[in-house]
Amino acid sequence: MTKKRKGEKSPDERVEQDAEGPDAPESLAAERDDLLDRLQRVSADYLNYQKRVARDVDEARLFANVELVKDLLALLDDMERALDAGRENHPAEDPLLTGMQLVYDKALEMLARHGVKPIEAQGQSFDPNRHEAMMQQPCSECEGPMVLEDLQRGYELRGRVIRPSRVIVAMPAAEQPPQADKSESPAEEQ
Image 1 (cartoon, rainbow, N blue to C red):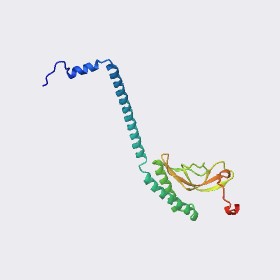
Image 2: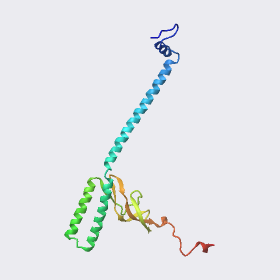
Image 3: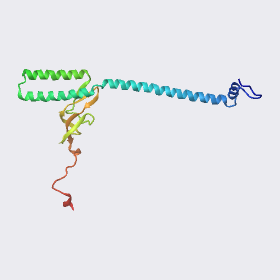
Image 4: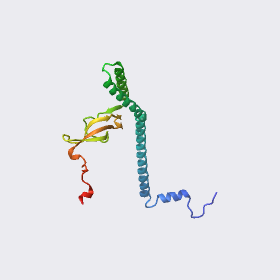
């Protein structure tokens, strides 16, 4: 045990004296307000973090099977081509063709139950977020870029495009890129 020297104050007495100083209540209040403000910001950040994680988990759950769906879309494309070829070479009442159409329709229905829907493109205004332009054709009656033909159907999963439609786009004559005249060469202009 240490002996108290004459005139020396104990640690408790020093804390009491510091708290009793002229600026002590204001500095303690300012420090308290600062700590309270920091605590509120940390709490708000934590709540935002929880919401963001919950949103990310929900989104991961909703879109977890995107790769599987993309693989199934290739199968649907093959079925569409087989149906088109069957319609050209067989009568409409052919049982094989009817059976293939039923299987195709059932596959589309099954995918729709899981949020997969085909993108309707033909006759729609061209949207680069939903359509992939494969070719352009001039159009004098068009006011803006329009989808003329759907070369490969696109699909979306719960509103998110997982494969854009590959399309032929009709472009107004005013928006056509200038064609270089092959008869003129840069050397002839000089």
